[in-house]
Amino acid sequence: MPPPDPVIPALAVAPSLLAWYSGAARQLPWRLPPGSALPPADSAWPYRVWLSEVMLQQTTVAAVTGYFERFIARWPTVTALAAAGDDEVMAAWAGLGYYARARNLLACAREVAGRGGVFPATEAELRALPGLGAYTAAAVAAIAFGEPAVVVDANVERVVSRLFAIATPLPGGRAEIRRAAAAITPAASAGDFAQAMMDLGASICTSRRPRCGACPLAGLCKARRVAPERFPVKPPRRVRPERRGRAWWIERDGAVWLVRRPGRGMLGGMRALPDDGWHAGGDGLGGAGRLIGAVTHGFTHFTLHLELALCAPEDWAGRMTAGEWWPKARLAEAGLPSLFARAARLALAEEGEKGG
Image 1 (tube, rainbow, N blue to C red):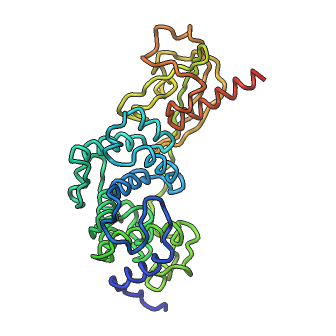
Image 2 (cartoon, rainbow, N blue to C red):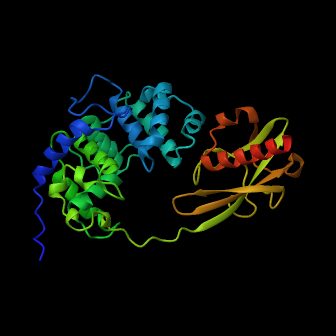
């Protein structure tokens, strides 16, 4: 018979984790070194933390780093970002996905700018800002201001569920995971603790093949006695629905016709190729044009197969929604979301083949 499960001494978690973090912390452009005093001399520090956390939602560190550095170079303070035009910011965001975040980013920046450019320092006040959900408010409160907020992202969720071997399937198990995370969150060094948990999940307590032998919490971890990969317990995977649509490449005199998507909804407010709304008749073109291929793109709740057709300007005259002729030579500046950027590359490749 195996020995009984160990009882995790909650007060032992933070010292072990922080000692590990002091030597293993990832060097990221939005971070201070472990043990740094708060607030730092950098007056834009809360802005940098907030910007990074918004960018990191449902996106990897590798994907975000370049975007973060370009945003900071262009808009070094929250007031500078607040003064930027919507088109500028949406174009700079293109490729990061989840475009509602960019709209909320601007709304929040403008509200903070209206407060004198100063972010509130408490989790409750941060939660009231546009676009800051429970996770982002807690992360900014802990990392930027040292408030002992409970920060639970996907990495932390995985670490805590394994540490305590929480067997309640997600999403129902999240409340239990949060209570357990609260029990081990220290009153001091809350920002370092939150980032240490994130780093542990990203580098050691990974979804597959966790490196338990290198984990500073291995001696406390209940899941290590069974199978760490079983945690967190996920519900049966649903089959992702598939949808089909059509977009058009309409060219005249070295320029391509772009439309502006509605402010709300998928890819809201972004420039795009005209399409059928991913169902027949969205832009009034029906089956017009010559099909040249298709691109496939995974959204959160479905997979889209988008056909692309070449269409002559005279085939749509008088039937299109408002748009603009955008020079092909400057198409990279249009800020097309990934789906339409890939479709545009398909059309340009087709032209290249014909030209060759």
